[in-house]
Amino acid sequence: MPRFLLTCLLLVCATAQAAPEETWMSVTLDGRKIGHMLNRREVLADRVVTTQEMNLSIERAGITIALEVGETHEETTTGKPLAFRTRSRMSGVESTSEGTIDAQGGIRVTSSVGGQSQSKTATWPAGALFSEGLRLAAIEHGLEAGTRYDSLAFQALNLDAFPLTTTVKPAEYVDLPGGRRQLVRVERELKLPGLPLASTDWMDHDYSVHKVTMAQLGLKLEVLACDKACALAPNQPGDSLQQALVPAPRTLQRGELAKPLRYRLSARDRGPAPSFPVTGEQQVVRSGASSVVTVSPQARAGSEEPPVAADSQPNAWLQSGASEIVRLANEASPGERSAGERMRDLEKFVFGYIDKKSLSVGYASALETAKTRQGDCTEHALLLAALGRARGIPTRIATGLAFVESFGGAERVFVPHAWVQAWVDGRWQSFDAALGQFDSGHIALGVGDGDPWRFFSGVGTLGNLKLDKVEAVPVH
Image 1 (tube, rainbow, N blue to C red):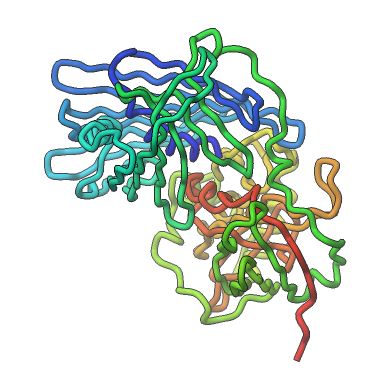
Image 2 (image 1 turned 45 degrees about the horizontal axis):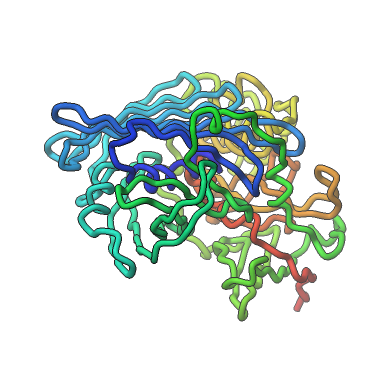
């Protein structure tokens, strides 16, 4: 969630005017202070450098996770993109990327996850903007109430650009740490695939942002401009993961979980029916304000597109070509085996290999997990997916919810979870190394390639889900 959050905040906070050069901000979640942010904008002779750094402290089931995230954009004074840098550090695990945009519109990127680097190239999306370009667009359109315009915002996390809609609302009085001020309300929506990110910011007529709000895990997240002492004040404890739990109306017996189950889910805020992907194991029908999701432990053939080349290749988070990953894959499933047998071998191996089950890791790559042998469901999933690819089996990461009898003091709940889908016998079939096996107690919210951007996109609806009914599917 935090790295994904910075994606949206950088867009709205970076529209601030050059003065002051630095803006300190306090970050709160449902009224509890969880961190701080520092925005910098420096105008040099021929370019503008915009930097945002955020430090958060988040609790999950009583375990505190420290997160540092930063992103820098370099542009010409007219808003032409030149280069970018990103950095994140979670529980001691660091990832970085550096990219430059050449005159022909190519992007050259070097990224590092857990100390392992790789380089790649991409094409700059025509018309895409960085922070300064978005700031200039805001100035061009002005702050008259009723103004509405679209931009194309580049996202360094996935080297792509997405539509950003900005709507200017009337000015209103806002309470801030430094006192009450009249500010212009600006609403924005970043149209990320499957997860539009909505935020509201309040700015003065110099385009300096003083407040930002958005929803995260069903909680209200606020970023407030204040002085340095206020921003660096001690954080307050609060478990954000509890909000993401979805209580089940009744317990689910092991025998039921081995057969198809039908779930009726709705939004806690009584909004539109929540969206769920259709997979070989999951069918979805919208019914009014609810979505009816039917999950089967056995995948159906022909219900999804077959794998593409990238589903079998190493990437920054699934380092299936690394010697350590290849060695573990060969140890876990030696000899001649079918794809299904290999995945079951690997599923069992990862379950036992990660001998320190812990929520303290945050989000580690497959190679890091192979070295540390610790983590939660995401580490189990990334390692299993990488091992599968190392044995020639296309894999991908599914994210969503899984039923457990108890978690963090709560009984009979669906918890945020990750598992693996592998291309076996002409279909995408699921394997769960963290819980030991896949069953119909899994509800998918998204599918990706192991990149945390796709992971947080998949779980973006968490915190606003309500499970109204669960029932067995009649056998005909």
